[in-house]
Each structure stands twice: as structure tokens, then as C-alpha cells.
Length: 392
Ligand code: NDP
Image (cartoon, rainbow, N blue to C red; front, side, top):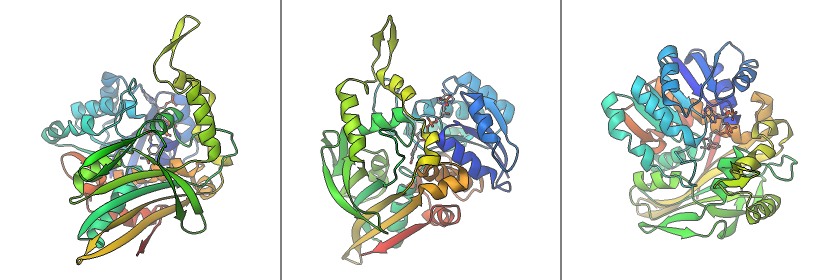
């Protein structure tokens, strides 16, 4: 049915490629392209069928265009890093190919992410007759779909959204991140931000905290307020919303190490001189930390990511909690990956499936909550991320 070009052979790329390769009727041909060909080949060597592998520098638009012209994909799944988003979108525009990613664009030299850069492609994608689906991971991604589902099925109006992301897993390392360390640390050390009564409120990094009682035996954990990109699109697309917040759990150990690394300057993203040449401390730190893809065999425990949503139905106040629980060891058994890469890679595959099957269609640039959530929610149950909803 469709030829897919997957860009990025990291932790998430590994899962997307595995999941797509098991659906030969949907993704008839697969090409995995990344900066390091060896990583593509390693992933390809463990799949149930043959795929192509190619080396590409996704910061080089002419190189991307040449690859797309030669391979002629129906869709590009971008699971490289947020820095590459605009380059890959530019190449898709030039060649006329649909685009999907899991994280919004971020400039390399500034830890600031927002949708404006990608929303600005709206007219050009429309004129070219192609579609971009932004943020088809778990958060953003599934969390946006949970909100759209709640609005469709449970509320006349949504007033409050709390997205709560818990990783109750343990990898046994003193300090490691479950997805790209550079992106993770940039995100966690940034100021917090939440939406309240038509404006954004900024908070010092990780300064707002409370406890939340997670379901199914995960129990009570401390959660920290952060800024996350889906807040920006949800506030735009869900009418009547009064408050939107994003929370994440961190282990005490993670926070202790992060504090020290920050205090000694190791999380800086500006270049410093070291023995006569420029290095970026955070990029150097990344080379020392465990590769997230290597955490699969050693991570135990579960993740629980969900949306606590409050609003009105038939003039009565109502609360709804929709969540998924994912077990690190089960993910490893299935695709040789830990649950963070799994919970991102599966929705990327499902988003691509929605597009190539024309279940979600359009021309322009879209966020997940703009489409009918029902087929996506059904696919989550079918392809490894079953969800539960509790109506209060
Ligand atoms: P990794 O660092 O494991 O993988 C990134 C891959 O992209 C690497 O293989 C890397 O190549 C490749 N890459 C980087 N730069 C280039 C380039 N210029 N050209 C070609 N390939 C390149 O990251 P993850 O797999 O953990 O994360 C992938 C994406 O998923 C990120 O954007 C992340 O923000 C997003 N994400 C989204 C989540 C969500 O829920 N929405 C959750 C988790 C992650 P090399 O190996 O050579 O360095």
C-alpha cells in the first residue's frame, strides 16, 4: 500500500521500524535512513523482513531531496532529532511527500521549542497538496488524542487538562535518560510554563511539585510541573479551555545528579573553549551517558502516562482520567526496546498508518487532536498500547 522512509536510527527509530515491518500490507516497502549507516543495518538485521538502509545527513536538504527522489516514498517518518524537523519538511515540500514527526522543531543553539516554526509551513504544504502530522509520539501524540477522545465522548466543554507522565521504571544506572540525553536535559532544565485563564504562567525549572496517586499499583509519586509542547496546540484547538498543565515524575537520584551537572556547567548548550577548540558541554556529556537504546535489557518497571481532564457535560461537572500503562520488560520482549522508545515508536507507526490509509487526511500542517480520535484509539489497543478510562 505505501512506501515509507524512516529517518533516524535511534531508540524510537528502532521501534517504528520494527512495528512497520510487521505490517507488510500497510507498509509495503521500508527504507531506514540515518547519519550512521551501521545503526540502520543493526536494526534491519533483526526484522521479520528485508528493508533498505541508507546513510543520510538530515541537516543537508539537497541530500534529503536526492534520497526522496530516488526512493519515492509515500510518507516520511522523522524520528531523528528536533533540530532536523524543518530541513526534512523543506525536502518533503520540494519533492511532494507527506511528513510525520514526534517532536517539534527546536533550534540547536537555543533551548526553546514552539510550534510556530512548523505551523508557518501551513500554506506551503496546502499549496503543494501534502500533509504534515506533528507530534505523533506519546506526549505529544497519544496525550493529544486522549484529549480529543474525551471531548468527543465525555464532555460538552473541557476546562482543565493535566497531562501526567510517570516513568516508574529503573535501569540500574546512577544517571541515564530514556530518550536522547541532549533533548531530555534541555527539556527538563528549561523553565516550567502552564496555561491559565488565557495566558501563560512561567515558573522556575522543577519548582512546582505535588504528589499524584498513580493507578494499578504504581502508587503515589512526586510529580513536577514542566512546559511541554502539546500544551500549545491543545490550548489552540480545544475551545473553552481554562487551564492546561504538564507534569512528570523524576527519581531523587536523577534530580540529584542533574542538579550537580547543572551547577558545574555540564548542561550548558553554548560552546566553551577546551584545549584550543570549541565544545558544547551538553553534547560532550551526551557522549558519556548511556545510549537510551542500550537501556532495553536492563530496565524494569512500568510507565503510566495519561490525561486528567475536567469539564462540563449536560451542565454538570465531570472528571475523566485516561491512561496507558506500559511495561519495560514486556516491550523488550516484543521489540528489544525499553518502554519510552516503545511508547513513542508505536504512535508514530499508527499516525503513519492513519495517513497512508487515508483515515486521517488533509493538506497542510496538523496536530493530532484535529482528527477523529476513534480510529487511533482503536489502533492503540491493537498495536501494543492499550488504554483505560475512569470517569469520576
Ligand atoms: P536518539 O538519539 O536515540 O536517535 C536519534 C537518531 O537520529 C540517531 O540515530 C541519530 O544518528 C539520528 N540523527 C541525528 N541527527 C541526524 C542527522 N543530522 N541526520 C540523520 N540522522 C540524524 O533519539 P530518540 O530515538 O530517543 O528520539 C528520537 C526523537 O523522538 C527525538 O526527536 C525525540 O525528541 C522524540 N521523542 C518524542 C517523544 C514523544 O513522546 N513525543 C518521546 C521520546 C522521544 P546517530 O545515531 O548517528 O547519532
